Image (cartoon, rainbow over all chains, first blue to last red; front, side):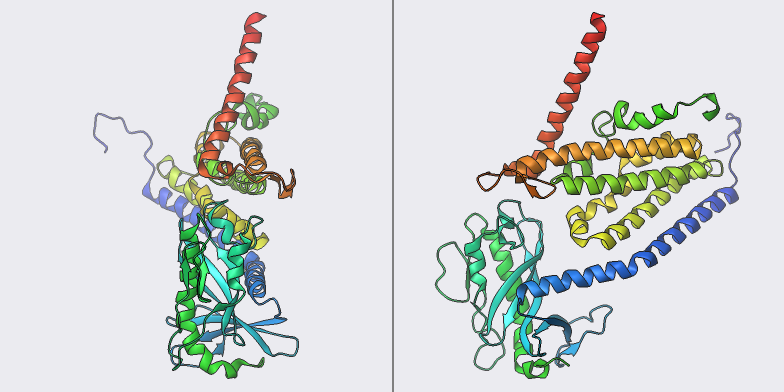
Length: 234
Length: 208
């Protein structure tokens, strides 16, 4: 760089550069860490509130909610916090005022038209059916795909009617769902485990169905035989 | 520079009017087009960007004498990224719904060229108070830009303003306005309005 043709303008010594970068990083690090700690409780409280709201929207009768983890081959345990171990399934149990189980809620997700559609569904052990749906997150087209979202003003009421008693019975030896939950073209629903898709938003409807099916397929065969363990609030 | 009678008002008004980042400089189009589907989102994005802009410009200006020019861009980016992280946490703490609505565009404030442009072209050459005044003006200008898109898109695309229904049940929303093309339509419309305005002003001055 310092060829003799170019007169040397004051070259910055390496030390000065390192010092400045170090100083800036230290200041910025301090700002980030303090803002993380400053907002931590509020963020966690917000997240908890959002989850509770989603769970309560699919188990409206629930007075209190508990988060459970179900490890492969294990029994449901109250969530310990921190990261979910691999293979473990997370679900929520809703209890009434007397502490009796009145519904299960779990999250699922599948690829929709724009991005993954994340859904929360409610499962009722009494009717062995899915009786609630709420959209956790989606980027589906406004006015078309977002009609599956019951929090939107333009929600398709006929579509939501699918989730009053969507069949999710297990087969005779309780190893799998008796019938997979599936979206069918608008107006061709014949069985209680089928979801009547929204006309014009078949892909989004299918994503909702697949999200529920994948999650229910994994959770229910493991959970239903052990339901008695969480019947009353511990 | 400051000693030669820098007009504070001019510094402030520059970003709001003469050099408006959205309508005059056409900078930071990524959030401008993407998050302005509703007035609330637009306002939140405008305020978040303004906070990052003001804090970054203050820090850049305070450090302007000790930052060697070889590493200045790296320094600015670290400073900007820091305040974006702060905003990211702050929005999560305020409202998760808003955080989900703004999505990746909060993190993308880091690469908003308006902020790096201000740090490089203005804050690094001016004393802190002038840098802050200028940044506040620019921030307000940016927020006004976003808001004028957001208001139009929300009214036409959803029939609401800040979530309040305006037209009642009979209104058929103009869905294209909340889809990506709507952003371009409305931006084009506003640019047209400002261009006509400017042309008229020039014609008036020529007539004098």
